[in-house]
Image (tube, rainbow, N blue to C red; front, side):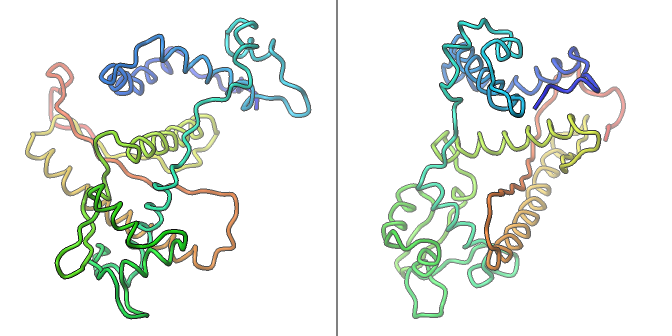
Length: 282
C-alpha cells in the first residue's frame, strides 16, 4: 500500500482536523498521568509498525531505509523498533463471552419484549422455556451458568432476586469507570469510526456511512431534550441491527469478516465566542 499522491490532502487543514480529534484523547492521557514522552514512545513504535506492514510493496522485502523514509525516523531507530509489534487490543476472554451472551439476550425474541428490551429471566426453567441457564448454555458449554451469573452479579451487570429471577442492569449496556470492558470498546469503536472516516477521505467515493446531525446555538433545555430523544432512537436502531445480525448468523457459514454498527450522542456547552450570532446551524 503506497501513500496516495493522486489527490494530496492540504496538510494544514489535515493537521487542524487532527488537533480536534486528538484533543479529548490528550485530555484523557493527562488526566490518567500518561506524560508526553510516554505517548511519543507509543507513536514511534506505531509509525514503524504501520510503515513496515501497511505500506509494504508487493513482492518486495520492506527495508529499514524505506521505513525510515516513510516515517522520518533514523534508520538506527527503525532497526531497533522493527518487529517489536504495535500495541494490540486483544479481546479478553470474559468480555467476549459476556458480549455474546448479552447480544443473544437482546436479540432473541423469546428473551425480549415487544420493544426489544431484555426481559427478566428465571435462573432455571423447564426445557423449552427461556431462562438464564438456557441462555448461557446456548452460547458456551465451557462454564457453568451459575458461575457466569455470580461473575455478573459481582460486576453489577445483573441481579438475582428472591424469586430466583435474573434482571439485566443498565451497567451491562454502558460499562463505566475505565474498567477492562470499557477500555476495550473505547479502543475498538474509536478505531472503527476513525478507520471508516479515513477510508472515505482516501477514496474517490465514500464507502462507509459516516454521518451526523448537529445544531449549534441551542438552549440547555433543547439540547437535553434532543440528547434524550436521540438516545432512544439510537437504542431502537441498535436493537434492530442486533436482531438482524443474530438471525443472519443462525444460517451463516462463517468466515473472516467482521462488522460493527455504532452510534454516538454528544452535547456540550460552547464557549461564548463560538456561539453563532443568529439562530442555529444544521
